[in-house]
Image 1 (spheres, one colour):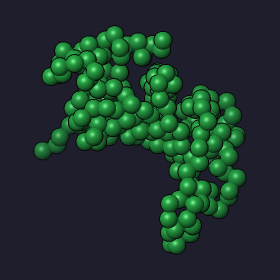
Image 2: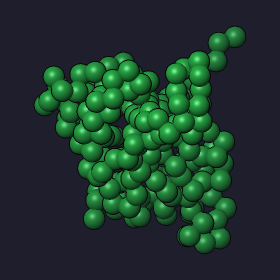
Image 3: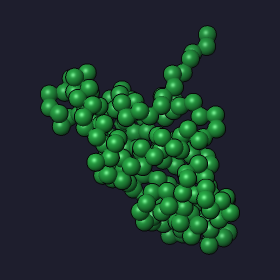
Length: 186
């Protein structure tokens, strides 16, 4: 069993059960999935750039990525219906915890000037969304710097089963994701 998954089941779940007003252990929030997404506007001009993004996504996630296509035509952006615009992958189960552990211990400490996630990055449904501006922070991509140096921003969404923002913040901070308290200025 993964270290983070073991920590969730043995410590975080029990802590959330005692702190919250849950009647059953199955009501305790959990992480449902993690969605990784590369949105590429440059793929309209160069079709072959999607291959590099697919390779990078597969190296980061450890599973096959799929391409995302446009749903409708936007003439001002020169986008036609069903045109490839990026790639994404969804992590569930054990691979979700492996990725979250890798993100927590390796990737986030390597990002320059990263102090933690803002409380505003968790929405009212309890999902955390953030961007990794330099995907070369992942060790899998750093070894092939020449190939992956022109990658776009990586969007990461952590989808939880929490009902509100407070439950999600308790869950995510219990899984050792760093959050920063905003200081109000008067």
